[in-house]
Image 1 (cartoon, one colour):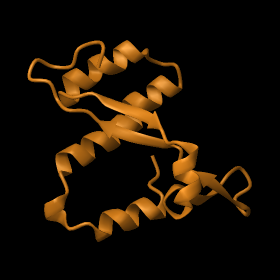
Image 2 (cartoon, rainbow, N blue to C red; image 1 turned 120 degrees about the vertical axis):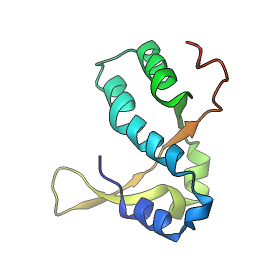
Image 3 (cartoon, helix red, strand yellow; image 1 turned 30 degrees about the vertical axis):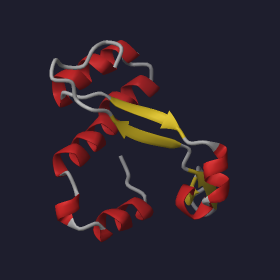
Length: 112
């Protein structure tokens, strides 16, 4: 997992007392493991939800960002990224959001 410079800069600028470090670490772990496994068809959505319940006691959801949001705030949602040919950087939209959901006192149901 690689954090883009923009993400690193935002983390550095945010005062540590405003960051839920456990939630941030869980979110990064989720992206690097469960989300990756779903994207690579190694596990099902149900398995992802079960793992989130056991490991994090909360669901995480990756949701699309509206195109209008990207168009109206391109500095927030577009980054230069090296694809394939490392010499050429292409502007790419950040078109997904990671949404931590509220933990359930009873664990996470299969419905999320």
